[in-house]
Amino acid sequence: MKEAEIKRIAAYHLLKLEGTEVVFFEYPFHFGRRRADIISAEDGMIIGYEIKSAYDRIDRLAEQLKSYEQLFDYVYIVCDSKHITAIRKIAPERVGIYLCSSNGLKRLRKAKQIKNFNSVVTLDATPIEALRREFKIVEKSKLETCEAISRKYKRENIKYFFRKYIIQKYGSQTNHIKTEISELLTLDDVFSLSLAPNRLNP
Image (tube, helix red, strand yellow):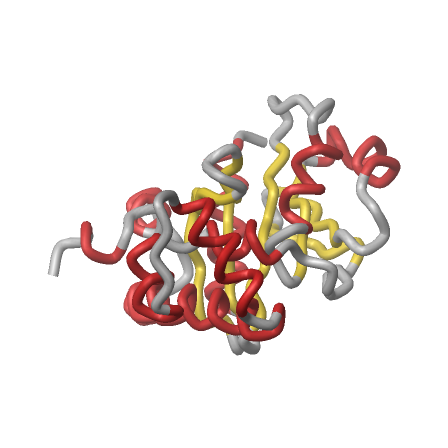
């Protein structure tokens, strides 16, 4: 199964889940070195999803998951059946696994909450303008700003800020699409979920 089809099926599943506040694609993080294939917010928690299609390599998966674990409350892999055996061996027990097929998503392993996140990576995952508004700290670079905030504020406050930012930024966009879909999520809907809210047509 190709990545675009897995995205479509996974997004439809997430949008239909009760309690889903946000679904968004291709979220950049870890100082621009990573992009989460899908993120969602459920019950105030931010979840990162890494997709592995039948055409993807998985030799870098362990390294990718380490980055995800520095930011998200929960982490899932959504994969084609081709990789399921190898992924079970590579992914830590705290990382959840979904199997994707033409019949939909099947959760094979439930993710466990990750509490040992990285405060600087979490701060970097939001725009610098949002950091300055919230924390009133300005340094020469974004990295220096993130480091200064992490020294002054508690980890719990930083995590709460990130969760709040994601839900406020992408919640309205997600709710709009949830009201539009019926029994099918189109590729146009998938495209809309990869655009920043201010790039969407009114």
